[in-house]
Length: 116
Image 1 (cartoon, rainbow, N blue to C red):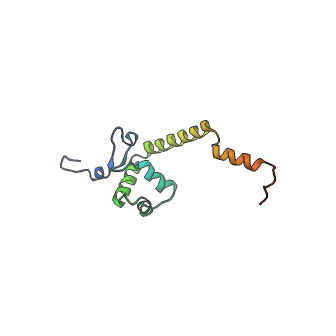
Image 2 (tube, helix red, strand yellow):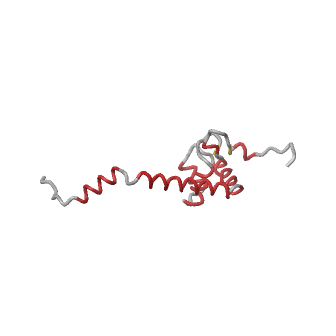
Image 3 (tube, rainbow, N blue to C red):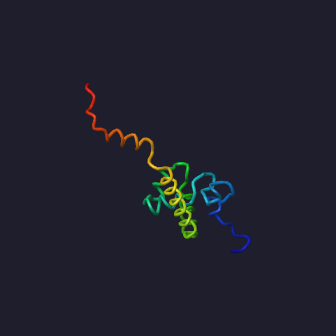
């Protein structure tokens, strides 16, 4: 690429220290490229469905995020896996939620229903 070439995708994708954990994201949003990749690749959302769900995103920005993902797939997939491991560890450390525990106790009681 010569000096007169302007990289167009850069108007849609940004990496800024301290913003989105320093990960590539849609410029002007807190939506990471990895979010768009998960919605499209794992959840099966089309770019148009992503825009309909997140109307502040433009269709060109979604396509730019997908292009960036496909150009950096290994690193972004590693970030997705790391996030999934972190969530699993946090869930395990937190144990059952208070609401779930209260429901379990409530349904475990053999008391008859109160009259009325």
